[in-house]
Picture 1 (cartoon, rainbow, N blue to C red):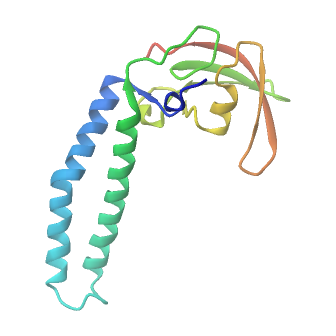
Picture 2: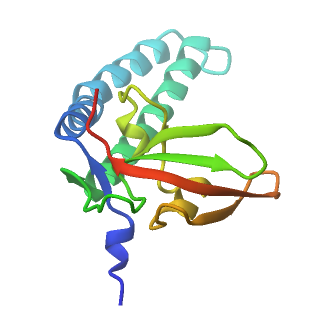
Length: 166
């Protein structure tokens, strides 16, 4: 039986984890205080129906609260370090090279959390349709996934090696 919690794990480097944790701590502490002050100052300006500053501050507060929830969930599910991986098998933390059916061009990317966007190559999420389809596949295998427009696309795995950074 597969541990369902393992499927939701997001592997992060220590640097990414620290950056996200600092953002969470700022937004859920001083950030909330700052936005509350903005809302209060705008409220004191009078009629709230036509008070653009008040509505802008409330919208900013809503976006900030959404980001706080997103960060809390991400940090709760995060593991620092490298995902277990085997060379030649696609998984998070691997540099993957694929070829789309009917195309001679090869595409290379890092399969990792979008929060690792500081990587010098394109990053595809393991939860994306392509990422989910190729996860666990071996070199030479093919994977088919559904595009947002409903069409199917097939790729061949050409290479899967651990990502070693810059």
